[in-house]
Amino acid sequence: GMLSLINIAGAVFAVMSAVPLLPQQLGAFLLFTVYRAFLYSVQSSFIAQTFGLRSMGRINGIVYLVLAACFALQYPVVWLSQTRLRGSYQWFHVACLLAHIGLFPLLEYYRRRSKAESALARDESVAPVILLEVTGPETPPTHVHGD
Image (cartoon, helix red, strand yellow):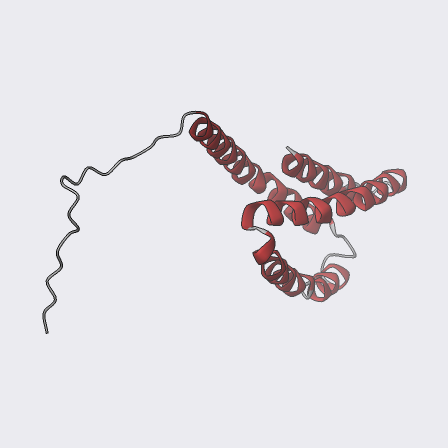
């Protein structure tokens, strides 16, 4: 669904960014602006549907806290690229591409699990099962209380 589409857009952005051609970089910039907008809206929708509205704020807070820690790594990445790699960020874009590729199996697992759960919920709503307890005569059970 949308999660896979967003992941594909992120992978395409990583590939486009790794190519050092100015026209392609402009295309990568335009793709990134669309990708980022959809990423945050799909993320919020996913968290609301998966964890519920009561937990949405806490989960978003945890996600943003982890992202802030990752964003703090930007300074060492820039320093490394400028001082050791002659200004090249290609290795960083390749790492981003590998991260997006690594997400595909996880997204497929989630898609299949969600599909199975919705099919199960649909089946349960069509044919409800009613369980009756058979207890015998209408006498209440006796409880023995000890000290």
